[in-house]
Length: 342
Ligand code: ADP
Ligand code: CIR
Image 1 (cartoon, rainbow, N blue to C red):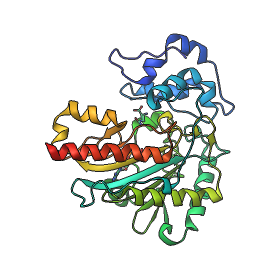
Image 2 (image 1 turned 120 degrees about the horizontal axis):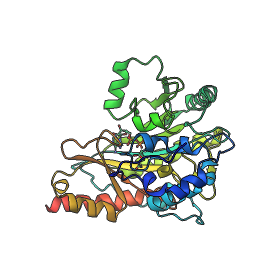
Image 3 (image 1 turned 30 degrees about the horizontal axis):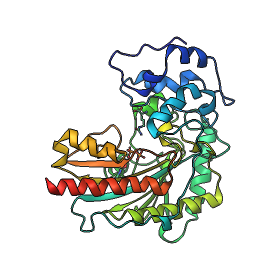
């Protein structure tokens, strides 16, 4: 493999940190599962408009290719090589109110965490048999859930395209054919082994075998962030009784994309900010100050519509679950106050 030819205007972290020296040092390395540098960087090489551009194949990838992953992790999360990740998923520590009790600006709230099973490689290099096994284990446990979390599992295979499109449009299901995931090897054998579990109200959902083996999601209309957090914490607890998730002392929960390490938590609101969003500089200054990320309303790499944005915590590693949500809460309070003053 030769050093990749990045376009001049490439701004990804991959092209920033994969210097010729780092490339030469890493190009012949392999993890015990057979994950190589070529596999790790393929998404960013094929998609020079990536913001990050790298994926892992297993827990060991983060050690074997540390010269590439460490500076990316440092820049994205502000988390150093010798730091330890500490978790705190205790809802009792989250002392917050609803930042928009009349639901004037916040349309909905969603919190998700990514998880992968201990004993399996990540989705980038998982075999078809292993992926099917993950689906069986996770959907089996979910089917036994009772009460508020009780629901049904819907495999992607066999789902009509009308149902699939409706679920995507309503923000419940992952999209199909994402080119970043495609180049990372995460869409192999599609749609086999993939699916979505959800309760009746679609307030608790689990995506199986998308970017991570599990995406555990709690969501509802309005801005009651705490209620969404409590439901998620309960669900994660229930799942953890039955399965062991891949984690390390240094990096917390291991995920295929380095931006999701640690808590693997993205807490977001869909919020109307028609006035503030006109002032791009101010919008960016405020979101940067509170470590928030702006996405469009159909998720990552999508555009905003009608002055509505997906605002979420950016940092996920080196801060606890409670702190991730506080990043969102504090930032959203400020965004609402500025929007109202304009
Ligand atoms: P992820 O959050 O899993 O990293 P995406 O950014 O692609 O992935 O978002 C997944 C889906 O969740 C998209 O359809 C997106 O619109 C939806 N979503 C995210 N945040 C919210 C929210 N606060 N309310 C409703 N839907 C949301
Ligand atoms: C990219 O590099 O653009 C994609 N691989 C997605 C990276 C994750 N995005 C993020 O900012 N959390």
